[in-house]
Image (cartoon, rainbow, N blue to C red; front, side, top):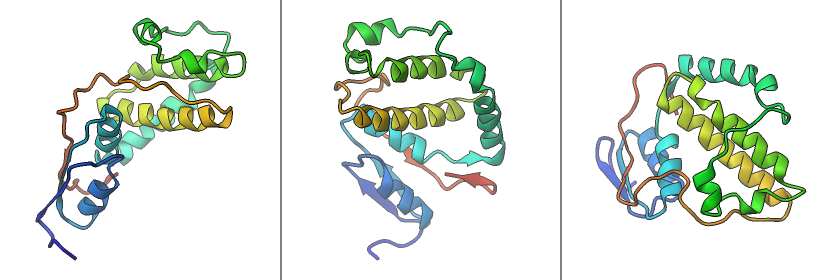
Length: 165
């Protein structure tokens, strides 16, 4: 071990934040940076502890998704993203159901009461979309659908009792 509990671990190229998560699980303070807003968002979500109540809220929201995610429903279009080309690879004949399901799910995230719950679900949807995107042999466009500047740095302090990350 190079550090002791309570010391600071710096990860200047944190990517998905795994080093931050592991450092925190070992009782270290963790600070990470990355030029990618996607990496910053993912690391923020992975290092934000959720309580059992948060998971119950998310489960309740997901349990009511059958009607909400009906592909016959009208989605909330992210027109600014579409104009910037973010959805061009998921609008084809084989991929439009992925795009529309994501739009419907993302459009209903405001039903969740807290930002950390919405971010957790948004991150899970992103991972699912990337998997589905690869499964049909295409790739997402580069971009910043999270609107975060590259200077944002998530940090993490160990959670309170009942917290899970």
